[in-house]
Image (spheres, one colour):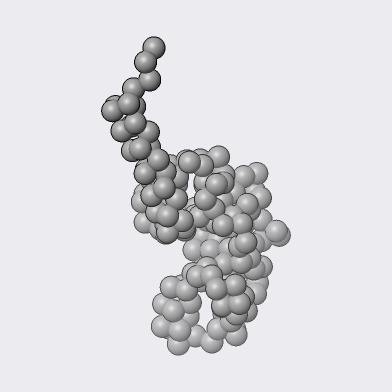
Length: 142
């Protein structure tokens, strides 16, 4: 199964010079746990709920004054829309992250989370197991 079939297309994006407070508001409005940070329209980083909690609130900083570029995770770890979910999960494991920006040619197409992979792979695995069992127990005569 391809990343493009499982990713979320409605992504919260925000310019790197916006405040953490603005990013938090936009994330809350969209009920999302992260925002992709843009520089001149190109994805360069990500800010998550955890970044806001640990790097801003936990440090006693004013979210109205802190810019997202100061707390974003960068460089942004990306995956191609044509990659498989297995490739995406390996990338997440390698970088110890739970979200990947789906990017090609510096253009943001969506976001893929570990939960998206789990949900979509469950159905894929079920289908593959069924096909295997069908082929084993009800082979097509030649």
